[in-house]
Image 1 (tube, rainbow, N blue to C red):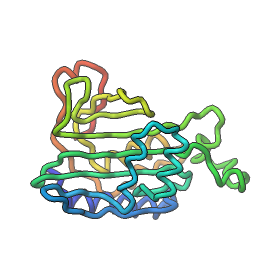
Image 2: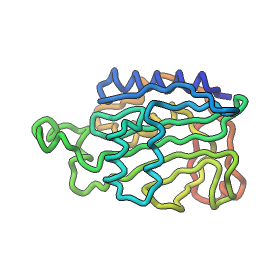
Image 3: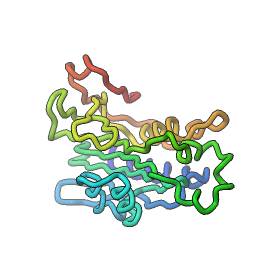
Length: 219
C-alpha cells in the first residue's frame, strides 16, 4: 500500500524529471499537511482548485488556476497539472489528479517561429484541436455504483461524466498517462525514463462497473 511519504517523494521525483527534460515551465513541489485525522498531500496554491468546479468557461477557469499558481506543474505549453491525495491512518481516502491544457499558446502569439516546427506544441497550435480538462478522482467515502464510482475519470466539464477506473491512480501512472497521450511525438518518448516507478493501490471497481466500458490502472 502506498503511503503519504511515498506519494510526496514520487510526486517530487516526477516534477524534477519534468524540469530536467525541459517540459516544466513552473512548479510547486508536494508536501504533507496534517488536518485533524487526515494527512493531505498537497501544494502551495491548492486552496484555489475549487474554481474548476464552478460554472465558468474553461478559459476563465484556466486563467484563474494559472494566476493563483494552483498547480504542481505548469508545462512549457501552458498546461497545468495538479496532484492531490488525502490519507487517514495510512489509508487512501481521496485523490484528485487533473490536467488542464492551455486554451491557447500565448507565447506563440509573440514568438511563432519557435513553435511552428515543434512537434510537441503542434496540437496546441493546431486550429482543429479543442482543449479540455482531464481529471482522475477517487473518493472512498462517497460513491454510488455505476453513477459515481469510487475511482473514475472525468473528461471535459461534463458534470455526470464519470468513467469507472479499476483503482486509485499513483502519481507515476498519472504522469505516464499525460506524457504518453499528450506529449509523445513520433521521435520522442518521455515515459521511457520516468522515475518513481512501482507502487499501486488496491482495486476499488465494483462488479457492475466492470460490465461497462471502464479504464484499467496497471497493478
